[in-house]
Amino acid sequence: MKKKILYALLGLVIIFVVYVTYTISNPVSPLKTVSFNEDGQNITITYSAPFKNDRLIFGPESESALVPFNKYWRTGANRHTMINTLSDLKFGNNVLSAGEYSMYTVPGEQSWDITFNSTNEYFGIMQPDPEMDLFTMSVPSNSLSDSTEQFVIEFKSSSSDGLSSSAIILRWDQTEVVIPFK
Image (cartoon, rainbow, N blue to C red; front, side, top):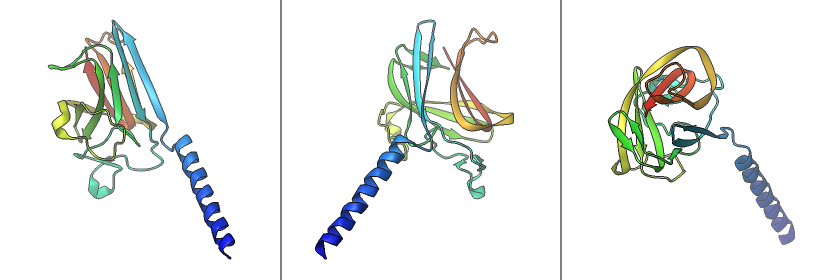
C-alpha cells in the first residue's frame, strides 16, 4: 500500500515538473527583443509580448480592462520591460545614462507616463520601488484605425520620415505611443 502511495506521489511530481518545464519553454506571451543601432546609439529592449485575444486592452478598470487607465503596467507581460543602452540617451530634458534599466508605464486616455527605473530585476508583477525611478515623462497616446493583435515595441529612426529625433514606439490594440529620444 505504501508503494502505491509513493508511486502516485512520484507520478504527480513528474507531471508537475513536465508542466512547469513546458510552461517556461512555451510562454503564452513570448519574450521578444528589439534593437536599434544608428548614429553611435546601440539600444536593446527586451519584453514579453501578450496577445489581445478578444479582450478589452486599455480602458477603465470598471469595464475590466486588461490594462486599466491610470494604473501601473509593466509594459508587456511576465517580466519587466528592460532597456539596455551602450550610450547616453536624451528623453526630452532627461538623460538616461548608458546601462540597463526597467521601463514601465501608466497608460491614460490621452497620454501615458513613461518611467525609467534603475532596477534591473526581471519579475514584473509589482511596481518597481519609486525611490529607484530615474525620471518620468508624459507622451500623448494615439488611436489607430486598425487593431494590433500582439503587443509590439519597435524603433523609428530619425532618418525616416524626416523626424527630428528617433523614437520608441509601443503599439497594441488600437493604441500607439511614441517616445522620442536623441
